[in-house]
Amino acid sequence: MHDPSDTKAPHKFHASEAARLLDPRRTTDLAPAALLDALQVQPGNRIADIGCGNGFWLEHLMDLAPEGVRFEALDVSPGMLQALEQRLAHHPRWKDVTARLSEESRLPLADGTVDASLLANVHHELDDRVAFLREVLRVLVPGGRLALVDWEVPPEGVVPDRGPPVDHRVSRDTAIRELEEAGFQDIGSIPTSRDFHGLIGRRPR
Ligand SMILES: C[S@@+](CC[C@H](N)C(=O)[O-])C[C@H]1O[C@@H](n2cnc3c(N)ncnc32)[C@H](O)[C@@H]1O
Image 1 (spheres, protein in one colour):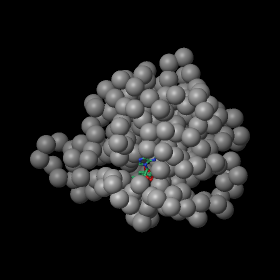
Image 2 (cartoon, protein in one colour):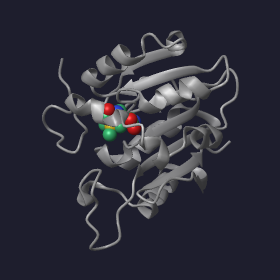
Image 3 (cartoon, protein in one colour):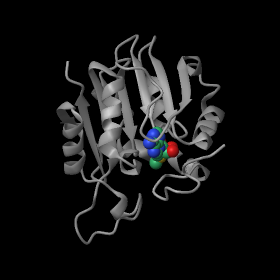
């Protein structure tokens, strides 16, 4: 099956490197509990991990979320969804997960059906970032939340020793502007290490 990370989009993280996403040190850049806290997940909520990859954050959410939460795992890469299933199919909460292949700027979800959503290290890979954020807004319930976490642009002259090339990154200020342009409100911060920015936004009620 065609995998968008194979050809035309060199800025997409390739499924053949998915193992790199499982570095446990990632939880020092973003604490899973802080993520769950920002998303204000309630029992019975539906959470969408958009661009879930092989499920590093999804697994943490499955470990921490209250009972009765359902999870949507979405990715444009069939290879990533395969890696996700291989890794997590034996998780006790896998029965609460629906994994779906997504399109570049179109989520396979109905309007107003998601309570909380996550874009982790995905924003900088999108072809049309504002259109995509509008699409996330479409699937959120009124008052629903989006957590956007991504690599920060380093200060000028600093060459980062990890993460995507500087010219592929999107700064925190640009991310805030794009969230607002797409229609998100009440933009706030999620604590991260200085190599990242973490933002939370809400669909207007
Ligand atoms: C760097 S990986 C991060 C994976 C995961 N969120 C994590 O933090 O471990 C980026 C993921 O976003 C996916 N992706 C890129 N563009 C996407 C889009 N338009 N819609 C859904 N997924 C996308 C890629 O296929 C890849 O799996």
